[in-house]
Length: 70
Image (cartoon, rainbow, N blue to C red; front, side, top):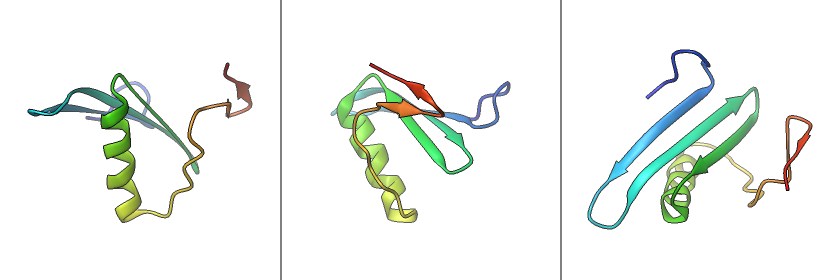
């Protein structure tokens, strides 16, 4: 599902027997931020993306677009 206000934001709802939740992707040029309420779903989303694209997984967020996260 694409956000109608911010064109680089996408959300995907997962509902199955193993896990339920939402993963949100924020894409800005060549940076990608993946957020969600379930670590297993975030891992699953990363694996799906890595099948199609060359991605460097930097694990937990420290900086994004010049903003420091703690």
